[in-house]
Image 1: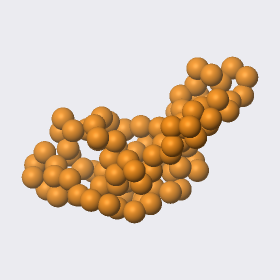
Image 2: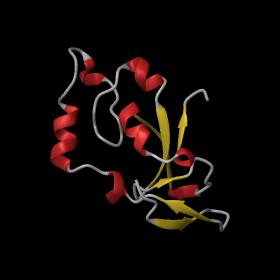
Image 3: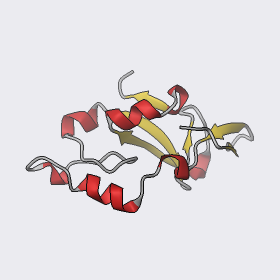
Length: 108
């Protein structure tokens, strides 16, 4: 995954960002992934990057990414104020694709 641009934080600092076009799957692939689940998993959370369902346990312990309102991924430490959507769970396969400073394992 490439760092494609920068954004300005709420305190005026410029930080690297990964645009949604770098990580977002096609709508068709994401919908196909969301239909792949074990019995009873349809209510479970999904990976925000690929759409695959995660078990409750996996979701509770999942790696998180910091996402902006424009769906850019930014470093976990970036203070981007109202441009932040917050921190979202991603599955283990997607987490491997995200650079170290852009993700955090829950509880780590």
